[in-house]
Length: 264
Image 1 (cartoon, helix red, strand yellow):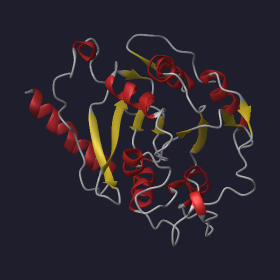
Image 2 (image 1 turned 90 degrees about the vertical axis):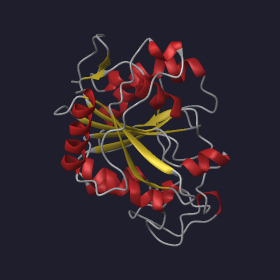
Image 3 (image 1 turned 90 degrees about the horizontal axis):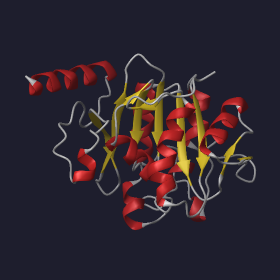
């Protein structure tokens, strides 16, 4: 009976999203890896492989929360040398059930870069300069690729976001330690900074931010995408114990039966 319900959920999820991806639907999650994990069930009830990296590694989005609630997507690991915030998303994925939002988390957006510890993907492209909005031919560590959306990781995320169309996206980075408030929704950005205990700042890329994921999404869709920058060495306790709950409270959401501050 449980298997039948899970398979039905997977079919409904794939049909509803219409993602047209390599793999969609439910992944039946195995037993917990440790006694510690067994104290709280995994919050993720489904996963979707949204695409593959240059080296063929899967890029996976995990589905949590409640449908018919505000849609939120959290992205980490866009730059492989900014790995600390991936722990926030993995903790949400593996922890108590999430309530109050319809949540997707992508903990390892650039799996090749994360495996190598490099900012760029396996072809040396900075994925956050590869999107087809204000794209420009950049070199060095910000190499933007031979053309807009040249990279499979970029195209995978564009398809995924275009189908889900979240109300909010938070893109987690390091090491600039702050939340950009020079954006279209500064009140929301200030709320994010306050909830996460980060300073407000201006992230201007030294001028125009070329080919960024947040810029592309904000230009293309009615939802709002925002960059969040942690410091160079955020502590493990912050990433796994404190920040996950803080992120949910940004959206008036919570884990388990804990109450949250409502979103104004």
